[in-house]
Length: 406
View 1: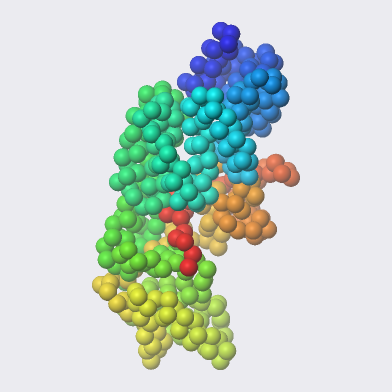
View 2: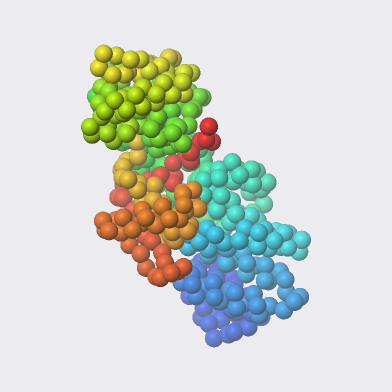
C-alpha cells in the first residue's frame, strides 16, 4: 500500500473524508476508487459512493478477493444508512465469511454488525439478539465497539430495558470518544436522547399525560392491567396477549379500558369498533359476537360484564386499568414514525420494515404527501420519502416491537 492510500485510509478511519479525498481524488486505481467511495458515503452522497465502490470491486484483480469483499461490506453499509433494506444479505454473509477465512476479523465483525442492525431496523429482535451473543466486544476496536454498544442499546430500548440501554450507551460513548470520530459521538448522543423524550401517552380515569420510556417500563412492572395501543397488546405482569391481528377486538378492549371502572354504551362500542353511525340489528348482533370473542381472549386477565347501558371491563387480578397510546395518533402513524428518524426511505424499504404490502405503503405515502406531512425526491426506483421528526417525541420504531402473534 503506497503512502497516499495509507494516509487516506487513516483519514477515513478518523472521520475525515475531505482529508482522504485530498489524497486520492485524482486517482482511478482500485484502492483509490474504494477509498473515494467511502469518503463520498461519509459526506452523504450515497449514489456516487455506491457507483465508486462497484467500480472499485470490478477493478480489483482475481487475487484481491479480500478487497472486493470489503467493497461489498462498504456498499451494504451505505444501503443500510440510506434505508435500502433490500440489499443482499447473502452477498454480505459471503463477504463476511471470506474476510474471516483470510483473518480480517475486524471487517468480518463489521459485516456481521450490519446484518444485526438490519434485523433491528426491521423488528427481528430475537434474531438480532442471537447474532449479537457471538461477539466479544472487548476485542473490538473502539469504533466497532461503539457500534456494537449502540446495537445493544437499540435492542434494550425496544425491549424496554432502560437500565441496560443506559449502561450500553455509557460504553458506546466511551468507545466513540476513544475512536475520536465526531459523527459516531453524535450518533451516541442522539440515541441517548431517546431515553429522555416522550414515548407514549398514559390514558387513565381522570388523567392523561406523557410517559418516557423508563416510565413505560415502570408501568408495565407495576401490576396494573395495560391496554397498549402502541403494540396492540393487553398485558398484566408477565402475561401479554397480542391482538395485532384482531383490530376489532383491540378497539373494543381500548374503549372499555379508557372508560374503566365505568361501563361503555353499546352505541359507543359500535362506533369505536365498527364505525357504525346508524346501528341496526345486524350491528348489534355482531357486537355480541365480538364481545364474546374478547371475553374468551381476556379470560386470564379480565372479564367483560354486561350492564344495563352496555359493557364494562373487570380486571381479575389488577388493581387498576390504564391505556398507553402513541404520543401522536394518526391514520398513518406507523409510516410517519419510521420517516421521523430523519433518514430518506424508499416505499419498498418501508414495506419491509412495516410488514405491509408496498401498495398499502404507497397509498399511505400519497395521502401524507397530499396533507403536507411528507415529501419525496427522485423518480422511479430512486424515489425517496422524508418527513420532519415531531419535536420532542421519539418514534414508534424505538418502542418495543410487536409481540409474537397469537
